[in-house]
Image (cartoon, rainbow, N blue to C red; front, side, top):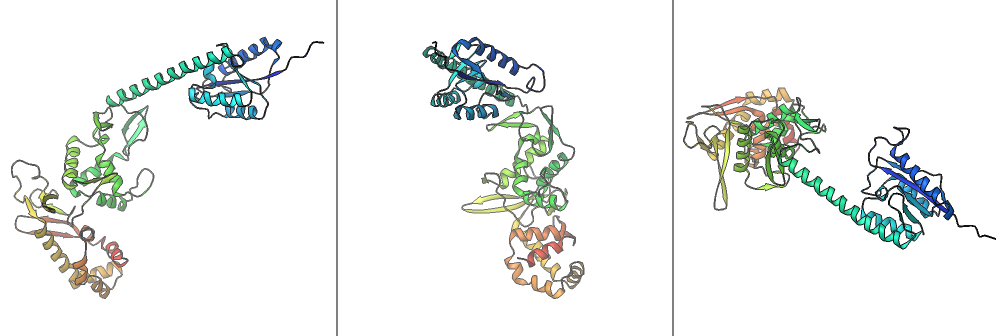
Length: 425
């Protein structure tokens, strides 16, 4: 009596990296071809007791670079459940392209006494020669995969240095189309406004406040904050450049702001903010930032800092005259204490006047007595630079510096919010 051969239950695993031609898109795909080859090979081993299991383990559209694939996970579960004796693949890299991952799979195969067979490479881990050939081929497969990754990295670096957009997060102000970026008709004007206003005000915080007041939000429909504005002001993408590992290269995309405006903004950032924190500009708020104007040329008077010993001082410079080799503007520069004391004195007079108090009372509903209580002498003595800056911004349209006098343009539309904020602190 001849003993019956032990049956070897064979599971066929197939994989294809892209979605084209997978399970549902064609009647006969490469997954089908892999399975047919596996079935034919199992049939040729029928004399050795091999039989093909009816279950399909097909991963269409999954990379071989990792083992996080649904059909492979199901195959491993069935191996652990004792349902499989042999795993058959068309080619070694169908199971894995990673030597490390394949080693992990081999540990599982050996633990549950499962063999592995590659149809086209004549590998069968049930024999010593098959196991040796498997290790050799897997080493070459890993080497090839690393070469491909290295070539991909080199191509990415070369493309970045050529100024090409390589995908990822699209900066605010741009939209992506056909793997390129173009100025967005809605967002680009907001970016231009940020750069122009920074030249005038030098304050990301004030710019964020103005954008929020005008009902403008970020791309995620959130309110603007000074750190986000500061990042935009320092991003070279808006002048048509790209940055890669600290180096700047000319980009292929269209600039949103001019090179002149960009250079002026960077000069101001460097001049006003010699110390930086990660994620944004370390901003020093001075009371008249964004409010003071030159009476000769109409441009902003910008604070410029200097250091003597451990103390820092600043002046208000005419923006036209600043960075010039010769004096062009008769206003030029003015000491901060002189101009700030004069504006503060005028502001105290305005808030102390009966006419102004009655006007504000009618506009806000706050009684004159309450206004007098809020803006008593102690308030002006304790008021910080930031509080004064906000107060001036809502009280004055602008303060114009002429050679021998100051001119004030008063507004009252925003005073209510300022007063309510003071009352709540």
